[in-house]
View (cartoon, rainbow, N blue to C red):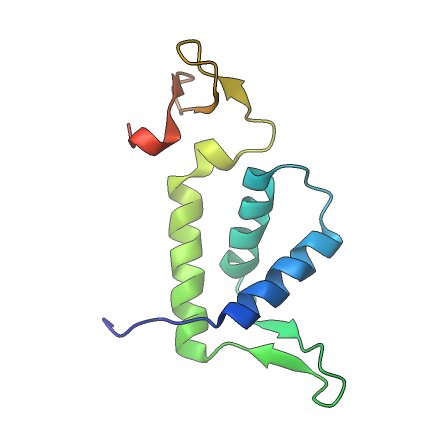
Length: 112
């Protein structure tokens, strides 16, 4: 299916608010992991804050399925980087970096 898979920014904002309210995570990678996990678990609806339209705002079935698949793939790909407690500094530049699966510090943006 090559059609675009669109999620409204309003839906993403509501989901981020939901995650921030219930999370005790203290880092961006940990919050991102929770964001991805929410989709990977098959969730597809957030509470509608509009008092006149109570209920939930739901993704379409196709969008929910594709988002779930993409979140699961991303979680598998970035597992080593999104583990809780994974915080190391690069000895060359001193910037906060991540350990790869072999335990070597690498720059995430380099793709290596």
